[in-house]
Image 1 (cartoon, rainbow, N blue to C red):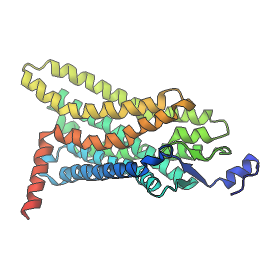
Image 2: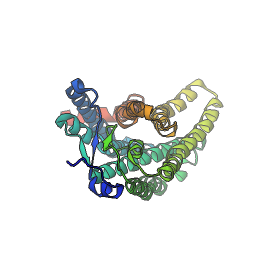
Image 3: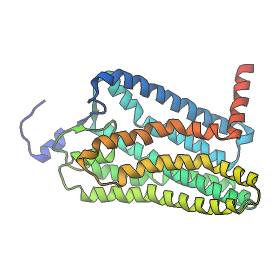
Image 4: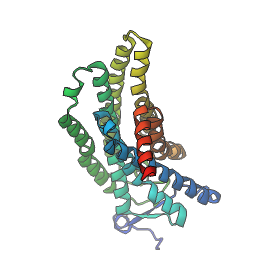
Amino acid sequence: MQHQEKPPEDNLTELMEFALLGFADMPQLQWFLFGLFLIIYIIILMSNGTIFLITKMDPALQSPMYFYLANFSFSEICYVSATLPKMLMNLGTQRRRISLVACATQMCFALMFGGTECLLLAVMAYDRYVAICNPLHYPVVMNHRVCIQLVTGSWTIGIPVTIELTYQIFSLPFCGSKQINHFFCDILPILRLACGDTFVNEMLVYILVVLFVMVPFLLILGSYTKIVSIILKLSSATSQAKAFSTCSSHLMVVVLFFGSVIITYLRPNTRHSEGTDKVISLFYTILIPMLNPMIYSLRNKDVIMALRRLLCKLFTH
C-alpha cells in the first residue's frame, strides 16, 4: 500500500475498495455481536419465510391483504439480505474491506428494497382503506389485476431511480479516507468520504426520500385519517374493535419503519451524528424486519390459525 500524495484523479482510479468500520470501536464484543446478529438473521429468514409460505399455501389466506403481506415479507428478506450477510462476514473474519463495486451494489439493492417496502406499506394502507371505507366495492376495486399492478409497481418503480442515484454517488472523487463509519454502504456515510462538491447528490437524496418515504407516509396518514373517522361512526363497540384490529398491526409497522427512516435521512447531516446514524439504522435494517412477522402474526387470528394448520400437517406426515 503506497502512502505518498497523489492528485485526486489518480486517487479515483487507485481507490478500488473501502473499509466498513461497523462495530470496530467495540473489539471485545465482536463475537457476541456476530452471534446476536446471526440469530436475528435466522429469525428474520424463518419468520418472514413462514409468513410468505402460509399466505401462498393456505386457502383461507388468499385475499389481497395477505397477497400484499406475502410480498412485504419477501421484500423484508431481500432487504435484510442486502446488508446483514456482509456485516456478519466482517464481524466473523475481522476483514472489513469491501470493493467499490460491491459497495455500490450493496447500496443500490438496499435502496431498492427499502423503497419497495415503503411503497408496499402504502399499498397495504390503501387496501385497508378500501376494505373499511368501501367494503361493498372492495372485490371490484381490489381485483386480481389491480393487486398485481400495485405490487409490480412497488417492486419496479424504484429500480431506475436507485441505479441512477448510486451511479451519481459513486462517480464522485473519493480522495480522502477510505473508512466508512457504518456497518453497510449507506448513502450519508459514503457522501461524507467524497472530496468533491456533493450538493447535487445531497439534493438527489432528499428528492428520493421525499418520493419514496414522505409521499407514501403521507398517503398512509391520509388513509388512516379516513379509516379512523369511519370506524368512530360505527354503532357498536364490537364493530369498532374488529375494524381497529385489522389495521393496528400495519400501523405499528408503519410508525416504527417510517419513523426511523425519516429521522436518519431528513435530520441535519453532521459529523457528530455518525454514531447515532448507526444505532437508528440498526432499527430499520435489522430490528424492525425481525419484529414485523411477530407484530403481524401475534395480532392476526387468521395467520395464527393458518400457522397451526401448517404445523399440524408437518407433524402428522
